[in-house]
Image (cartoon, rainbow, N blue to C red):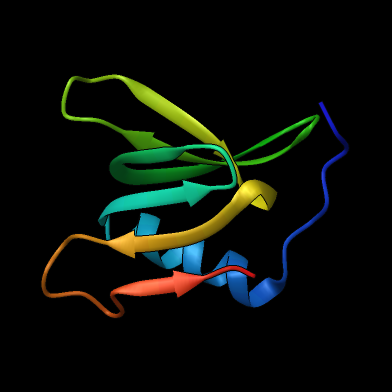
Length: 85
């Protein structure tokens, strides 16, 4: 796995907002699309991860520096789309 590159403070703020509001989101990376309810940001030795809970109680952990775009599916919401690059 490649080394973690910390994300911008503004991008981190967006992750905190979607977790705080428990938004249902679609997270797009360069290689995958993940869907679920944003529940937490976890710090691990190889980076920070956005934790998504799916409707089937499965959990996805998406490394924050791999996120390209987030679409918020919950309505009403503070924003509908956020581009990380």
